[in-house]
Length: 117
Image (cartoon, rainbow, N blue to C red; front, side, top):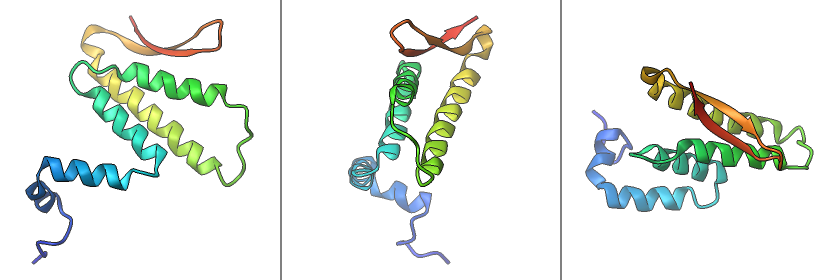
């Protein structure tokens, strides 16, 4: 029988939303990827603008001028995969209207994610 101290969903629910939010902020303090994930999740609630968050991140990657060393390739791959998953999740919410996400490049080099028909 699992202990009450084992971090299962049932036990974590018992901590309450406020305490879990505090713990989540503490755990993600030094992890930029985790904070980006939190921003995406918060943007996906209600009328949040997920497309804007994805576009900002893709533009940041596009604008970057540094070379990706072999040690950073996996991290960049995980980041791009997270963006791909967010786009896929967004497109699954839109199919009823026949819309799909599309990347748009503007003249100033910005990358925007928009929904097109």
